[in-house]
Length: 307
Image (cartoon, rainbow, N blue to C red; front, side, top):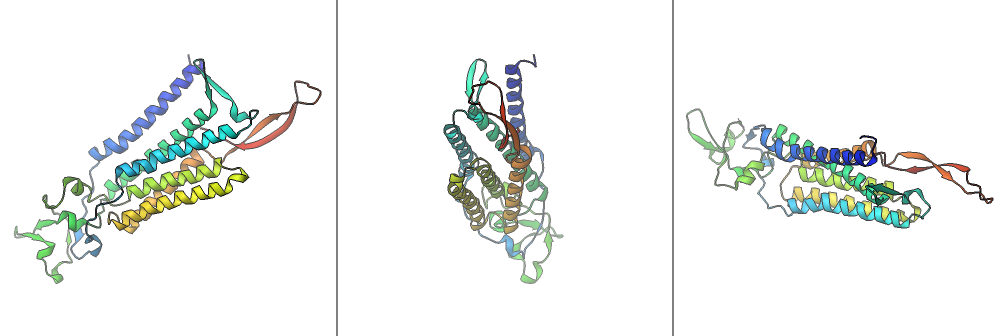
């Protein structure tokens, strides 16, 4: 049964789907429910936690467009253009056959690169979620959203507003947030500042597109277009990071850590998983003038995916 090409392809598709499904289920469902967030304390004199809450302009819907829809459309367009511009005799115009249906090679290329991209994005979400729960860092608008209160040794309820400037240097570990101060969704996210999930996801997506454009748009006449697209990707990542700082959603170190995490994962996926820059030797056939059937002119190198 394994010798049947159709069966092998179906098995590969099923394995890829189950792998991606399991990865995203762990990152988005299992970890938020099973991994408890570390309960960190605070100092009432900590000025980094006294920023006002500002509703973010970039929500989850806009982030989904940036990290899913935009990269998928970009890679689809690039592969379609490459398939249209490649000469008919080139090896990239080969066709694949699945259950009697001839499939263009650019479809398989899109499947490979989009699948690898989604795998890396799942890793970024998994690493971000686990780190947020294990660190439990408070967001810059912690005091504005939480308005914490606690009991002292005499069972008297205290808050930072009741402390004098000389007595606000103690470290408070056991406290509770005012449930009427903010919505439950905000109170649930007030301990998830490090690293910035938005910065990590957007940096991964944009860095992946930068590497992808460098590997696939290698024609000399595409250098200016490639550089423009790469600068645009970098600008999008910077704008997302700046928005997280401007809306007081994350600290500067949170954003820097998110950018480093996303960029590092993008480099790992492009170089080690997709191997975008690996070159293989391809045998080129040259037909002699006397119309003999056999004869090879030599080898040449081209970049390819080894996925």
